[in-house]
Image (cartoon, rainbow, N blue to C red; front, side, top):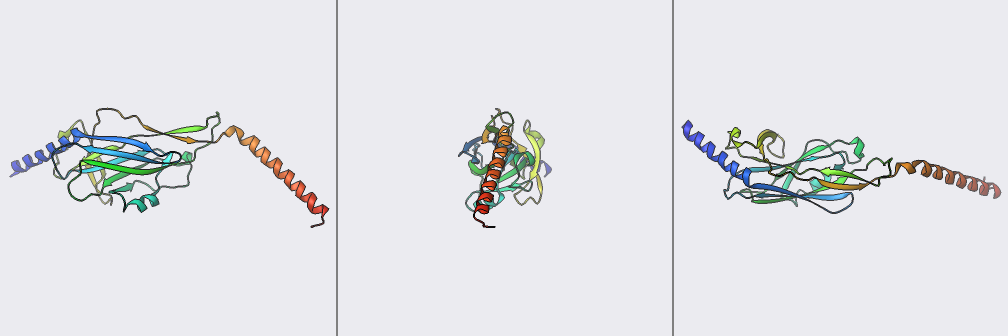
Length: 231
């Protein structure tokens, strides 16, 4: 009995290994300005159909954010659900914000499809002005981690060199499972966002000019009111 269970477990682990060896991830960026879309495509090339679950883990830098309210409004139109690891403050500038993690779960019914596409709206935070004359700042977005999991494979030590990591089992975040992270054969170059920044060297002249104009307007207004005996 135990031997049959072990053989069956190994069969499921072999299926998972096929998925790990044949799956790939590609990422692209669309739109311009402060409001972009990160499009991730997952290709699961294994010919073996199984109940393997898929999870995409995005690790975002502090220079960008996702809007939880926007994601909630889009949830009925998309075939995936997203879990945030922390509360997102939409108003914080980049230098006061923190990086965060999103867990993306396909919400399809039935066998896992061989091709998945996930589009996440991402927004740039305001950045501190530059003191060296730069007009743009860069924010690099790393490719997401692709994790796979199946309840039938428990001998995860047989899946090296792919690492085993802990992550929420589902979008409800009620329990944690051991997922297998795909070890990519090639390194991905990060996506680069370019955001405009202010010129800090102009702060003094702009403030001085604003104060001067304000004082001149106040003087002219006071003279007019005195001349016409408005007070």
